[in-house]
Length: 248
Length: 247
Picture 1 (cartoon, rainbow over the protein chains, first blue to last red):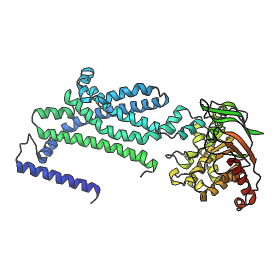
Picture 2 (cartoon, chains in turn yellow, purple):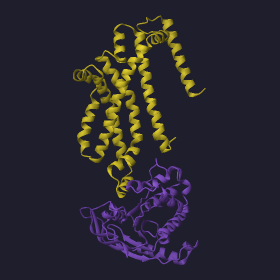
Picture 3 (cartoon, chains in turn yellow, cyan):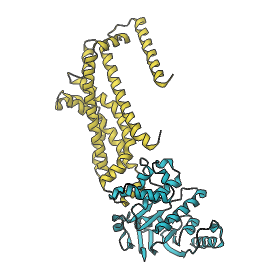
Picture 4 (cartoon, rainbow over the protein chains, first blue to last red):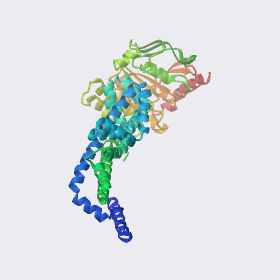
């Protein structure tokens, strides 16, 4: 059995045990719905769930993209003007230490209950890993390579394009993989508190209505979304980093 | 005519700590000169000054009548580090064309290919550096330093990471490169055999701080397989070793 087949088999065993446990214990559906109930809810509401999932993913992706672009830009900027690090890093660490969920009401107050507050939530979560990792990548650049580019009179654009950016790719992708799933969490948390759309909203509103099978179906889709995002980044990493470095 | 002029050069790192002190020597155009000396004699510092990487020092340095910084700015210096410093994501030929790309003088890899052909690496042009042996990577690094046709070639212990058995092959390749290009070459090395085998002249430095101890002209007829075992060759090694031990 290949790796995918083995994973599929394990999931199937888990679902069978879950179904059997629900049937034997006769636990009420609003406490623990059976997998069959979850799947039938998913099938019936697939359009509604997917529409909201796309919305959540859009917010998560936008936050992810903006935060990582800012982080890369900032890290490269710090590389050239190192004194800025003393200003930027304490702010970045402070942002990292504040639990994002605690900021949600304030963000909704400031940026409204629309997608913007969720995008900013996702941004806040994604910002730190990329900044720290890219900075680490820049700091571990081979000093001789930097001297070589200096001897050849490379300008800053050439230095970034030909040396810094390709060198930081492994560090950047490590951060992107971490923040890809975190971005989805950020958007979901934002939707929990102040939204009338998105997967987070569906989860909370159906929880209030005791529609637990719907909650499970929405959680399943959000989880699939996070996993797919992670593997999409891994795919890009293999294409642009591992292959180019001859690591696999 | 001298390609490199070093006149009363001193380099102080911390107050009272001199890496080089009152160093004076010159390197004739087209010649191959080695600098030997124990640890702490400022060999790498000297190369950093000559290449214009380190800009603050006392004394005068001229690279073909230009200051090292001017020579660097006009891309007239070729530098080879102890490690190959190749970009792992670029192919061999892309690494060799890197200086041309930076200077905007690309010729679609024509010169790079010629240089690689000179060291018989033309069949590895599309390979990645990690597919080559350490010595071959260092040869790529040497030919890359020639890509912009520099006035001087500075080599900082380029073969120190290569085993003794293979090193002699790369010495011959380096001699071949020098014979064909006639670039003024300054080699920093710990290996006395390497210095005598490759150079027209050996400059011996003292440690802490680096001062000129002695300049020894090497007059050997190269090309013979048994050169390294000849009395003449061994005599030069003995002479340098004695100078180094008379601290």
